[in-house]
Structure formats: C-alpha cells, structure tokens
Amino acid sequence: MTLDMTKGPPARLMIRFALPLLAGNLFQQLYNIADTLIVGRYLGREALAAVGSAFAIIVLVNSILIGLSMGAAVLFAQLFGAREYRKLKSAITMAAVFIFGITVILSAGTFFFTDGIISLYRMPPETLNYAGDYLRCIFAGLIFVSLYNFSANILRAQGDSKSPLFFLTAACIINIILDFCFVLGFGMGVFGAALATVIAQAISGISCTIWTVKKLRFPEFKKSDHGFDRGLFSLVSRYALLTAMQQSVMNFGIVLIQGLVNTFGAALMAAFAAGVKIDAFAYMPVQDFGNALATYTAQNTGAGHDDRVRSGLRWAALISGIFSVFVSVLVFIFAESLIGIFLRDSDREVTAMGAQYLRIEGAFYALIGFLFLFYGFYRGLGRAGMSIILTITSLGTRVLLAYSLAPGFGYKAIFWAIPIGWFLADLLGLLVWLKTRRSLRDDFSFSP
Image (cartoon, rainbow, N blue to C red; front, side, top):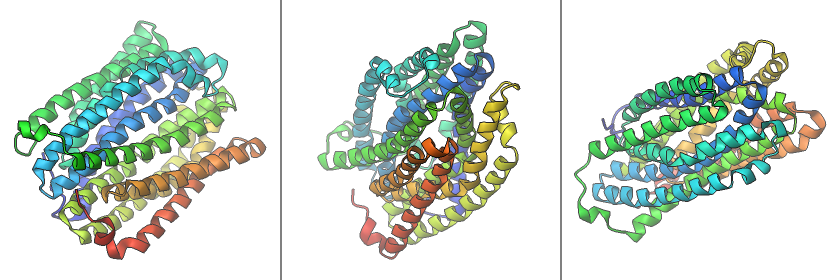
C-alpha cells in the first residue's frame, strides 16, 4: 500500500511509516540476537567473542549494499513525489543492474579473501577459526541481502513500509528454528548459526523481490522503460554511491573501534559484543524514524513543498528526543540484566564491563537519535555528501579519541569517545541547517 507523504500531518505520516520499519528491524535484529544468544550460552566465550567481532565486519560489508539501495531509493521517492513515473521506472531498471553488479563483485571478493580480512582485524588466536567459518558462509549469501534491501526500498520509496515486514517476520522465525537445529541439534557450531542466517535472508530476499515485481503501484513497465538514460543514470549512481559511502564510513569506524577492543582480550570483546546488541535495540526506533524522515523529505522535496520539509524536521526532532531520553533511563537502570541475557550466569567480569559500556554510552542516546535524523534529512534533500561529512565527524572523533586515550586510560576511554563524537556531529549538522534553512529551494532544488 502506497503512502503519499506530501499531504497530511507530518508527525502522523512519519510515525505511520516508521512503525513497520521498526517492527521489521526488530525481526532483522533477532537474526543476530539468535546467533549471539545461542553461541554465547552454548558454545562459550571464545565463540561469542568471534561472532561478535565478525559481526562488525559483516555490518561493514552489508552497509555498502544497504547504502546503495537506500541512496537509490531517495531518488525513487523524489520521482514518486514529483509524479515522474516514466523516469521512476527507468531509474529502477538502471539501479538494479548497477547494484547487483556491485553485489556479485563484493561477495566474491570478501569470500575469497576472508583470511586476509581477519588477519587485519587483530583477533585473538583462539577466535580465528570460529570467525573464519562464520564469515565465509555469510559472505556467500550477500546477494540475498541485496535482493531484500533493493526490493524493500522500492516499496518504501512509494510509502509502503508494511509489505517488507511480512517477509522479515517469516524469515526471523525460520532463522531461530534453524539456529537451534543446526547449532544444538546437528552440532554445526558457529557455521550452523551463519547458515541459518543465510537461509533466512534468502527466503526474505526472494519473497520480497517477487512481491515487489507483482505489486508496483505505477503503470506497467514497457520495453522503452529499460533504455539507458545517461543523465538519470548519473543521478542513480551518485545517490547510491554517496549513501553507500556514508554507510560504509560509519561502519568502518565501528570496525576500527572493534579492532581496538580486540586488543583488550576476549572478555572485553564479549562485553562489547553484548553491549552493541543492546544498542541495536535501544536506538533502533530513532534510527527508523530517521529513515522515515528521509522518505518524507524526499517526497516533499520532489513535490516542492519546502514548508512541509521544515515542519517535518521539527516534529521528528521533538519525537526522537523524548523517546531517546526515556530509553536511556531504562538502559541505565537495567544495564546488568540486559548484558546478562547473552552470558552464562558465572561470567561476572564480562557482565560488569558490558554494564559500564551501557551506562556511559547509553546515557546519551538522544545524541545518536538527532544524528540519525540529520542523516535521513540531508539524504532526503539529495545532500548525501553532507551525511558523509557528519559521519566522518562522528566516527573520526570517536576513533581518534579512542586510539589516543585507551592506551593510557584503559578501555573506558573507548566508551566515552562514542557520545563525544555524536555531539560534535550533531552540532555541525545543526549549524549547517541553521545557515541554509531560509533558502531551502535555492540550495536543495530537485532537478532529476
């Protein structure tokens, strides 16, 4: 079902769009939670450390594919808002060829060079075999990640955030069942956990693609819609590559932080892995609200409704701020219990480290909430380059402070570096917006 976000109350439209995104991402996180929970409780600390550390690499690789589809979807949403259906169909065709070509190359490269990737990552020796088995299986299934994200983003560009949810729900249930079967029933170890994830991703990717092809809401494709348009392809590739760059820069910084965490040993690796899983749930709603703001902004930019663009940002900031403060309080109070979900009861050292992480970093979820809004807002305006600058500011500060201070002040410096990076990026995003908000059409006009 399409949702025209160029009409109606901005807050209600964004919430309506964001709720299915949130539900879908909850199920997607359950993919990873199922792996982590089963691995941590039944395969031990070293296996948990390896899977948690490998997860940062997987997120980095996936972020490239997800960013390509997200970036292309901004153009799709702008064209949908402008009612340029012929250009929209042509853009979808060219984006598909472009994105899936990159996916094949990336999947082959990461699969065959897994050992080299791991060697650069400074994992403890006892975790290497676990990580290698897990990563190779995941890399072999990257095409399914692209299938799902490309088809889902076509639907979301038209305001349909509900349909992709159904495929993720089914896939999540299958993933959890297969986790228990492969890891506990068949004794396949971390490879079994990875295989369960790939099978689930294949189901969601193929199913969502078939549904998208059948349910496109604008007039039927014709042979002439598959022609090559150099100008439109330039826009497609620019939007896709800039957003992929922003997503990959963001996650590359996380990989660098994970590499520093790895030097402190398996206990901190396990604590950090569990803490990151809690983060993924805690600020997922504001991340999804940022993505809703991106679609809202893109549709209204395409339609030329600048007042609605400004109003949408104000409402999004208010809602995100209130929610983030509430979640920070809950995470601070229940930090030990949340970390303990992923660990054996006897692992007190890891629980204490993980709780420290949550109480330092989790107190500032409002900052990451505003940053997600700026990412989505500038992306929706077609200014993905600004999102890259904000990402570099946030992650660059985090990496610089962590690597500079951790050797002298210990691992807590890694935790404190995170909210400091968020704050500086938020400040920059706000200053740029205050400078340009009065001339929105002049600076960010839509011209596909």
